[in-house]
Length: 278
Image (cartoon, rainbow, N blue to C red):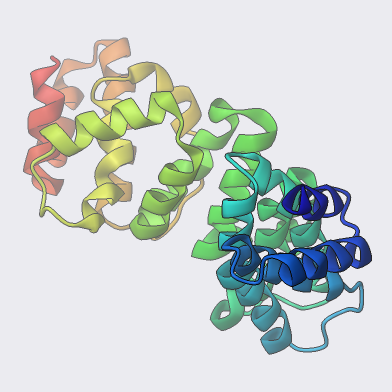
């Protein structure tokens, strides 16, 4: 009953009520295991604020406290997805407090955008990212915008940004795929990991967009919307693949053979995957 009193107050975000219920539980059962995880949650409720952050370091400190101290406790108190739902208003408050802080690559997590994402406020995250100069050329905001676009409009809308992210930052691309957990992309990723004969490290994922086009030719219309990035080998290979698909439709065999040789020179494993489907 005493535990339920604490939970009831927490569910209503009633800091004073939660503190009273927690104290009653501690007085009656000082060795109760629930005190370990109820305590940080009640502390977080009592520490809520809307005062803007004046420094990136202060925002980072607040984010780390919520992530490292409160979030694990919430996961124990609230089962399943209900924990993330309960935390959403607290993340949104931190985002609001960080709204005036400019983007800094060395303090990226202090920006409002990733905090809005944690709160499930996709439109507000997108708006915050759009205010970052050249966001599409910087790994962190590009990753944030890709997630926001996916959550708002689905996979088709996100594909061009996913492609750019793979070229720009394979490691962030990998992390984002885990968060999105999209069934279609997961199937492609598993097939890529199994069949692509690359270097065997995370940078292989930069070749993922070009590899996808060797089999899923229908995605070409979406991949063409990806904007130029670093002009590296994986990006050039994807552009070559798009050119090959166009030449195949037009039946331009001489140019097709030349372009296939170009693909082979860029990456033998990718060329082998392409030829396997031809």
